[in-house]
Length: 110
Image (tube, rainbow, N blue to C red; front, side, top):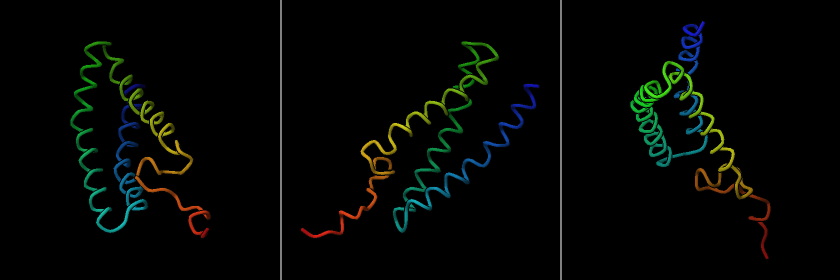
């Protein structure tokens, strides 16, 4: 049972890089796109190197369940971070990407 869960989980994770790069492409244009996609690839690669090491350490501490505990906890923490960060000042993605969404007030003259 757990083997099939790990197999399915691994297959679903394979699309994360594609979805992430699509999101980067929607949010950035021009030279910003180049920099953002480079940073995305660096972060994704760092996660591919560090993730198995952290899972191994978790298994040393908790035993075999550590293999599933850490990959469940890290995305949950990431979701909490994004929910807290996204829209913290009322503008969607303004904190994450350094850009504020235009409002109708931006175009009015005093």
